[in-house]
Length: 264
Image: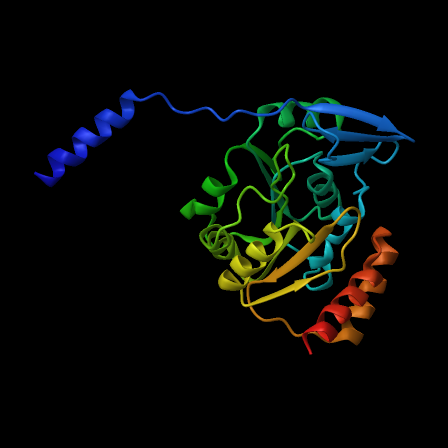
């Protein structure tokens, strides 16, 4: 009887048309050599300096790379929420030994990243997927598959990440290999901030936040296992990162120190 009931439910489910998500229009603007992505509002969803298409132009995007202080040679990196593909392109160019995956639900974002933001086509290392980020992190095939997750999941309202539950962050944690790190873009002055931090601390062994930048962006660093925070060693690593990439890694170390001081 249980088998029959399940079969009926499956048949009924198959008769119902799948709900298609509704997306805001994808729009562009340009100023001072920088091209910006919007979802039909004034909120900036990403940016690209036209002369430096692989450079993460926005400061919060640069902070999303703070995991480099702890992981020098990642084997697999995943981006949840494509934006202008700034982080995806940077990781793809900067770490030629790594597999880089990106997940984006909106097909218009995928199309405009290819046409207007110089996202390269998929190849043996780059995999850009049209799918829901929750489905991606819940896929058993992605269990312990990534050294790094970068999470930037916003819709047109830009009021907070569209995925922010303990269950979502637990699934993200499960996708990380031992010693893995996730960075997350949050809004520090919005009610969603406290909810996200609480959910992250439920799922992760250790969470730090870098200082606020832009109009409220706060990048959280979530560690799969508790890290060794040797500030002198991090400063030395930051100098290496800056010399190799020009990223402002020294400011990340200052931010980590400030976060540690605030915890005392």
